[in-house]
Amino acid sequence: MLVHYICRVCGMPLATTRAADSFDPRLGLSALTAAERASVLSFQGDSVTVNTYCDTCAAVLTPTNPSGHSH
Ligand SMILES: [Zn+2]
Image (cartoon, rainbow, N blue to C red; front, side, top):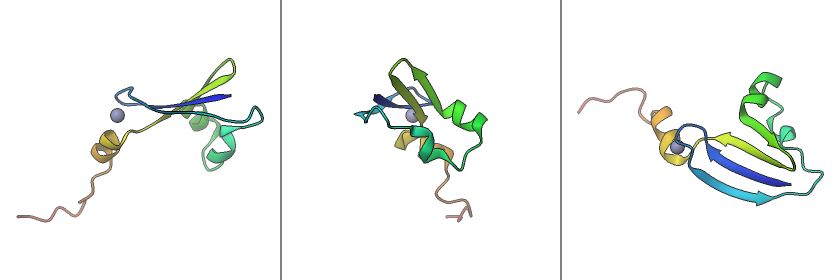
């Protein structure tokens, strides 16, 4: 099974790995609901795309300075 990681925001391909055919990416997402897993994972034949965030988009979506120190 090929596992493609792409950024769900900008669509940039992040990584592609080959996993064992018995690999189930859902196992790593047990904290998510079924609906959330469905939004993260999309299966195409024997490959799966994991919709995640690249470093750039993660930085935008996750403010590193939420307390807002003034300068
Ligand atoms: Zn991105």
